[in-house]
Image 1 (spheres, helix red, strand yellow):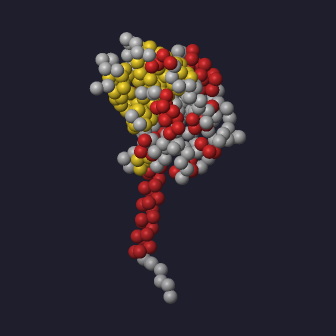
Image 2 (cartoon, helix red, strand yellow):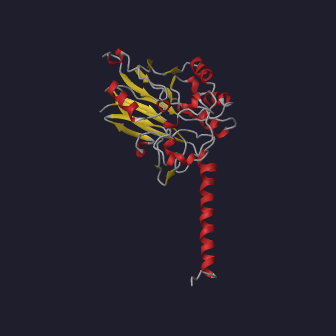
Length: 311
């Protein structure tokens, strides 16, 4: 005869179950209502400039995933202008709603006064669709899902035209050069690797010329797939900037990512790591898909990267 627990045992189980449910609900509430808007500025230093070069400050922003009405995000992005960067690098995934372009341009407005460069991500081209967000935890990458036939095209060209009109430079499968504060910045940028749109232009031949003015070669992409990083390294990049990963978005305590949504190792999902000997700066981003508005142990961030002279 099988006996079942009664009395205090049942009450103990009920108490434990209830506590677990409450803890889970509290975690979800924290991830949605608190950490989602717990914006941070992370600082990094990359010693990649020639000896004797002055420091050069880059504000790296990524993965805004704007939707209308995100006032706290807009206020934070406005405050970033107080950092007075020498250059802004935007690594894509700017939109998460078909009607969000005015909100995005309002959020970016003070930053568009600074010199800037940009590359697109998938959510610069196509609005997100509702899918099971937990699939990120068991799939190395969602790139194999392709472009959903249900996706709507975002106002990509209108957005890029607005960036261009304010002086930002698109690095969409192209190389370009900017000279700022006496530093020659040689860029090689690609369209979104996650969508397979990337076609590497390499660096312009003059990027390797020895001139009196100091110079640095920067690779810029949205999704940091290893093939993309390796190609930048092979082309001669001295530093690489990327986004896409959201830093894992839902992480373990201490910020340990469970996924990077690409083939980059999860311990490189945010921050600075090395591809060979080249530093790779990956942003955890400022937003999320509107269908998965949570962050856990992974606050949204902008990064102030100071390029300094090599020792």
